[in-house]
Length: 291
Length: 291
Image 1 (cartoon, rainbow over the protein chains, first blue to last red):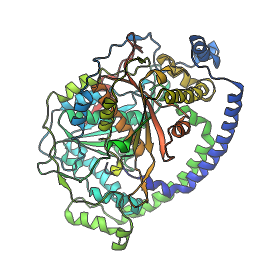
Image 2: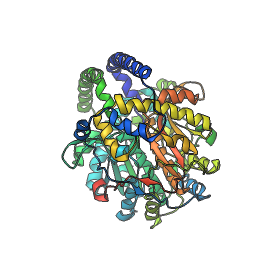
Image 3: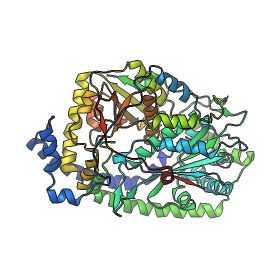
Image 4: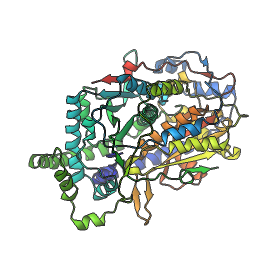
């Protein structure tokens, strides 16, 4: 969470947003006209193999089909056997496990889990689904103290500006209950930092640019799985999204510029007298609607 | 995954993006000048209680502090006792559990888990961290066959346009290995649809607008936790992001317009002879870098 909160910065850019919006709306109008025409002239197929076959060839001649190669290889499907049928207590036990997770800001600097545990957690994160199976994520695991210090310096520098000048007063107010500020001791205390980058695009085996559809959503889903794995391993963590630190952190870690900072995750053990904000989660009825 | 893939639609809007970009760059330049001035005139505090105190008061007088109320209540912190210390096998066992997950498109229409299982999975998702603890998610659980049919109609209508006209030929090619098309039988076959909405903002107890920082990342992380819970319960799922269906689905479900479609998740059991694409996941060395 922490610096997961910078929407109000956008307010400062209102002229560009407004400009883009107006041009966007004009284009949207023409798209709408075209779609309307399309809708009135065509009927949607409901089901059936013929329509499916027809669909995939309708807009493309055989030449076109060969020209636009998919990023993934086209292979026959394989049988899938799900591991187990409904485990009636599985969901409840899993909820009991993850409900114990809290974001902490005070890490025990002297206690370090083995790297093999972190590796298994990242293996788990790597099972996340992604747009067209592009797997658009890189997990940078930092344990070198000097690199952790450099990360902290970058983050504190920008966060100082965020808290004092850049962000809206409402942003600063909304952070008050979490008692955060620009000093980020957890970055050097936590035995591991996992800096999660989303890849905006990639490269195919034959050197073409590969579009990474929905890379932010996919990488965030992977992060959710990572948090569960860390919890299963008995580790604590803190999810942060340091504002304006992306380029500096990417350069520090020597990563290519198709990789963008999504999340800085601190991982380790809580100190003995760890305290957290007295937060309550929304009840089920507030987050789930039945139809 | 499925329709998790529409970046190329943006290409059609290039003039608005270019326009916004130029104006944005001009503003960025002025912001840069201001930040540069700020950096040269101020030094970042490194640590210490005094600086922390100073920081939180520096930019705001007592009046300002009282004017901008935080969205959350300001309460004393409470002690936090993590559930368990490192479970050396926890991460490995968890990886074994989640590696068995695959997105499936052929659901058994006759087999339905109890709603209590789905509820526990959504309870688990609701433990996700979120920007300033805003919990910006709504999970719409659809089991009514007529609503599922209406959802399918909306999605198939738009997807037909996506496949035949709207999207770039590369998008259509990239989907070929997954053998998807505009016919979405899984929407009516799956016993449950979980339509996941992100809330762009909310309302405080005293009726003010509450900013939902990083609502997309937060809701996607919650989705990652939900997928793990479903897997722990022995259920199968399919993550999709139907393009251009947001408004129609929101209206169908009678949800307010601060809630935007993020993911349409089909949940249930695989058919007996279920097949999936022959995909391999990236090895650990491709997704994890050590420092």
